[in-house]
Image (tube, rainbow, N blue to C red; front, side, top):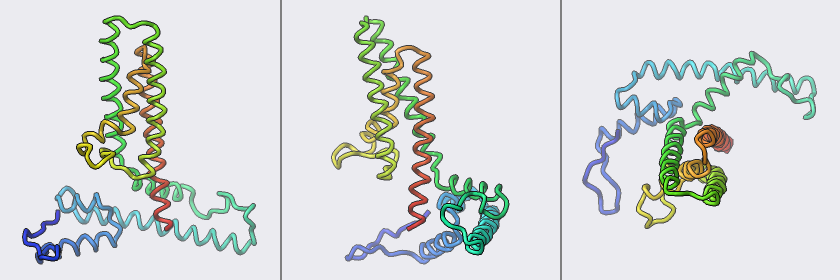
Length: 242
């Protein structure tokens, strides 16, 4: 989206062309209008029209204005009626409840990276399938009852570690693929060590029967997606409060 000239000054600064400066100013202006980064990228890629993007922004701002008016009216009411902390409840909110719900939905949609979640689902499923078929092949060679029990409990431990790791990744704002160390070979190694791959491995091991495997896979996908989406929203909301 932004081109940099090849020539660089000795002090390390790059030389921006006039067109680059214009592009930067366009991006800054759109961001000041609260146009999301993904929408700006689509604009420059020609995937959406400026009018459509701004009409969507107007719609959102109208909703925000209504909610702001309702917030102000709610605050005035609380002060006027001399309410105490113990009196605060959703009933003190002024305006249409649907407007409040719609505002929250817009905020949540903006905070959640849906592509990230879908990648996580795909990664978990891929590892769960691969590990399950590996276990099935090994079983054909003769698996004892002790081996099956070991796989089940080992898998459940991996699932538990995967969920703990989901919290760690979210709170440290890790990308989908990343490396734990500087010399680990880049994102490929990170892909083998993220929470979703660990969950998939756990499902593949713990799912000693196909019904159990399917149930664990669905449960892990749903729960991991919910946890990560909630954490995305909570972290973004905390950043907005700063």
